[in-house]
Image 1 (cartoon, rainbow, N blue to C red):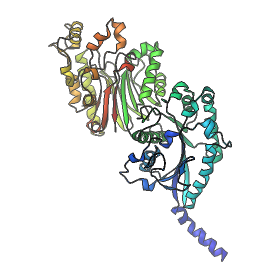
Image 2: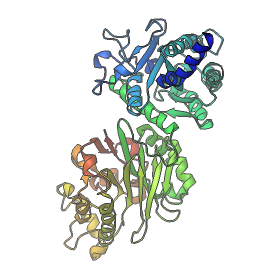
Image 3: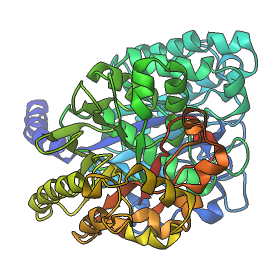
Image 4: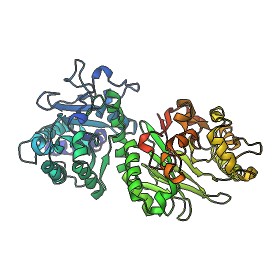
Amino acid sequence: MYKIKLVAIILMLPFLLKAQENIDLFIWAGQSNAQGWMGNAAEYPFDKQDLDKSILLNWTFFRNTSSNGEWGTMQPQKGRFPSGHFGPEVSFARELKNAGFNPAIFKYCLGGTGLAHDWKAPGEGGIYDSMVKDLKPAIQKLKKRGYKVNIRGFIWIQGESDGVNDEIANAYYSNLKTLIYDLRTNVVKDAELQIILGVDEQHSYMKDRPAVVEAQKKIAQEDKNIIYTSMYGLPKADATHLTPDGLVEHGCRIFNAFNLLNAGEESTIKHTGKFKALTYNIWNGFDWGNDELRRGKLQQWVNMQQPDVVALQELCKYTPEKLAEDAQSWGHNYSVLLKEDGYSVGLTSRYPIVLKEKIREGMHHGALHCVTSGIDFFVVHLHPGSIKRRREEANILLNKLEEIKHESSEYIVLGDFNAHSPFDADLYEPEGYFLNRLKEMNNDKGLNGNLELNGNLDYAVLSSFLSHPLYDVVRDYTSGLEERGSFPGRVLAPVNNETNEQLMSRMERIDYILVSPGLSTKCINAKVCNGADNWLLSDHYPVVAEFE
């Protein structure tokens, strides 16, 4: 009888194994923004795809409420608000589901907690030990349901409370390394467990003691299976906590980071959440490499914007390595430089870049055609001093666009066009300081200068792009040169012996982000960043566009 039963079990084993369903387990831990401190569930994100019922959640609001160690479906959690609360785990898990994963989120959080004093080192009786103790039976319960549990990642959104003083902040690196080592070695038993880190860089403690932020970045740089994520630019309900919309976007950022951990060098990663593109003419490569102070300030400003793609012009005396340094400073691991001589252009991205073409023939400075995140980007810097040459360059680029527009519905042309838009024609005073100055500088040059033969500005170059058609997204969100002007920056006042008032009176728009019809409907904001933060960073102002 025993042999008969054994044979029966062996015969059934392939069917039992086949029936076993994989579950992708993510451990989610940290303090208030990991928990969703201001995530009022009255604003719980609408589940239009009806995904929540197929996502598992086991949650603990430490020392408050919990799911009592049980697995339920993704939902608001009790506490904080009458309707409950939620965090970034909701959008993160939904995106995982859309990507083909079968996610289960083990969430263990408490706001205002520090790694040193609250979570503590393994074995010291802190929140970390409680989390590990509760994690083990949670995994067993999944297995008892018949799941094959794959522990896919650890999300750690924490650190602000460890900036309370220098001693604790400086110990954060070793404390976090210890936690990660124990989790990998003694808990999940996977030395290559993927880990996503994050902290609010704008928290007052982080501004005073950036050692915590730098510790997370350093740990990520040292380990290919760890990635750092930024919270810059996410909307806040107060000085510390993200709004419900901010929590949703944060979850998308964390999902994008998870995708990057699993990406190959030429993987095509479609961005989730809001997508931001930025273009910036940096003015003679920071004085041909001699102005590191201005370079550092510009790097810091770009990092605070958290763009997903950055197009740069006037990369004078740049090498691929130097551009990669800039890219790293704002969280991009991918970059392409057109050339190492003259006035170069470049592209950096959060995602792998496929170089399609370095366009140099017939071009004064040249242009780049790259694909990243499934979008074709053309980075341009047209001739600064000749209408005739700009028109010729525009034709070259438009022919390139004609070749790809039947294959791709999403493409962007961005950079320094050195040309004016017909949409701005009524903004320039016929006898104002700007046009009179331009007439003096271009006397008798004809189309080899920057004025038409009749003495007017040339709108043909931009018109040719607009009629392709491409859409000028800044136009829809701005009015007047006070908002649209991208040149000249106030840094030129002492250089040209002009007053700030004179510079302001000759503002013009020559930098653009032009997008395909397929992208124009997805644009939710676009602007020229010509405020005080950028007055002294370059002679041009950056242009930013955001898409959903």
